[in-house]
Amino acid sequence: MSDKVYDVEKGSSKGDLDIEVTPHDERVVDGETEDPHMHRALKGRHVSMIAIAGTLGTGLFLGSGKAIANGGPVGAVVGYAIVGCLVGLMMYALGEMMVYDPSAGGFIEFSARYVDPALGFAMGWQFWFQTAMTAPTEVVAASIIIQYWDDAQNHLAIYVTVILICMVAINMAGVKYFGEFEFWFAFIKVITIIGLCIMCLVVDLGGAPDRDRRGFRYWRDTPFNSDYLDLTPPAKARFLGFWAVLTQAAFSYGGMEGLASICLEAENPRKTMRTAVRAIFYRIVLLYIVSLWLVGMCISPKDPNLLQANDADSGTAAQSPFVVVITTSGIKVLDHIINAVVLTSAFSSGNEFLYSSSRALFMLAQEGQAPRIFSKVLKNGVPIYSLAFTSLFSLLAYLNCGAGGASEAFNWLSGITTLGSMLTWCGVAITHTRFARGMKAQGVSRDTLPFKSFLMPWGSWVVLVSFVIIIFFSGWTSVKPFSASDFFSTYINIPFVFILFGAWKVLKRTKYVPLMEMDVTSHYVEGSVVRSKFS
Image 1 (cartoon, rainbow, N blue to C red):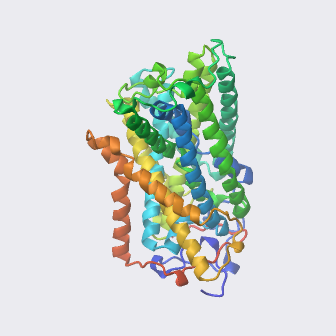
Image 2 (image 1 turned 90 degrees about the vertical axis):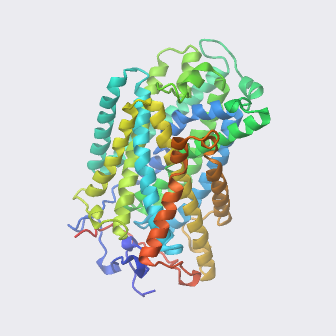
Image 3 (image 1 turned 135 degrees about the horizontal axis):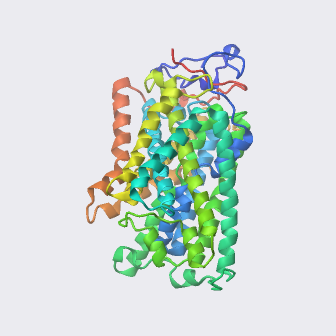
């Protein structure tokens, strides 16, 4: 290592990636240069609110209904709690590295620095692919919600077009306006979830117009789904129904790791990232587990309205389980209000995934792992070509307008993105275990970390082993009877990642980073911003 202090955004220290470095005395400080650079315009309140509710969208508002129908009310809560704990551990592992060195490359750079540059290449493109596919998934979900009011199939293309134009326009406006938009919509999501929890509690206690005091009736009568896919014996159906909840929960929690994407545009990133990672706990406990617990007390998993809302073969609009509770309990008007909020949530979530995917492509270009043109930045800090290229993949939302209908398009795209999230989480876990071993081997105390968890590094091993098992069995329903489309959407990411890893390793002849040669120092410089390397 050189004695010079380098800018955080320098990329990997290894020569394999051919990344330029910027000495400390030449670093770029926001507002003091005309060079194209990313703007650190995301304030602490923006980052914290995005961390709590930024990617909160269809996973909870729509997907939770499928979780209750598949696993039963108890199975849904337990499944979401298990996956929530695993995702929380993953975020603490990522948080240790991210707060220590809030560099532009995020886990893309960390995996190259601590494991192998080929892993950084594979993880970067996998994350870009995952987020690029999730954006149209949220657009499809938004159009599904609109069908609650307008079920005319020939209007779907219009709705999809309007949503896509608005998403691109917000991302084009610059990160300052993006952050403000996401802050207020995230605030609406949080207030809505709190309100829905109170409403479900009132309904459960018999305060709704139907005066039906449900209590723990459904938890007692059908805690798990004994009829899942008509499997026998019932014990097998209950277990596999519960297992289906795990993959559904993974889809719901997907996108949390995207918090690393905003490091390069966050004001005072060490402080804001530390606060944001800690906020993940409240997001998991309050926004997911408590709300799913309460809604599961208010509706039977065998309710025909809930089953119809999750019927993949119906080709019609899927409803939020919260809306089903409102309509079945006799509450007037509120269903339209909640559905409108769910619509904004899906739009906001898609907007953030478009942001994350464009920044991932920008990072790859900065690292020399994508065409350099994708690192070009406008004066307002927007990576224009990365955003434009990524936006093209959002056009997949028009699958919604095909013969299969909205439900088929949503299920196909969500299958791709669910596995993508879990693969990214496994990559983060692998990277963190190597980071911890490298620090130990070089005698660097964990006390030097600005943010650390007592659960690490053992928590990373739990994350890795658990998600490998869930990934392996995630597509079992597509095997018997065999469904090519379902199998493809479930497992396509796995060969994609291995091909990326192998191709870059062979092409660039990268090497596994030895523990004693690992760069475990922090390169962050206060006040520095990210220069575009496009020329």
